[in-house]
Image (tube, rainbow, N blue to C red; front, side):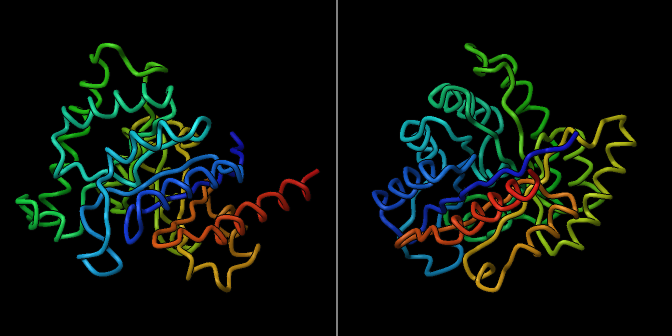
Length: 267
């Protein structure tokens, strides 16, 4: 299938007030984005750990109420410090608050202060990956038996990560969206690995949407050719990541303008 280009905004709940973050949600939806996500950390990850910060899932519930059209989710929820049964029930509830607009973004975790400050075991990359692997069927089973069920019967799953042997295999088995990282060449290679995992389990790889994200500093010298290269590599879902204190949306407008030019040129 040929997927349309989608544009999303990741409003990181760090270094700003809740009022400013909420205002950015409203503005981004008015600009015409397809999705608004946040992230799941307990501290700012790119600045002072003592900076302003808000929790992911309570913020998602507010995002569900503050918007009316966009897809919402977390990019991505750390399974290893959230009980999988409880996480599934939280997701089901927020899905209903949003009227069925939730995507459940999941990952294995990587930022050590999130663990140590809140009393969770950080472990190793392998132990976190194994915990993630074991949690996925639990999450799916709990969401399937919750009453009432998700609004549309099933909540789509996004998985973030690029490990080729295990993580991308789990993407092939469980995800509706894969969120990747790297240059167009890296994304092209990872898409090939993901496609091979899909073939191995008998799944159509076209069922999995592929997303990429840019921060403001990455867009300073970016042009249409760069974004087009990601599309050629397999990505069709483009996120702009913004944070406090001012939640500048210039980069988001840049992505939206590029998409508009692509649509116009294809007519």
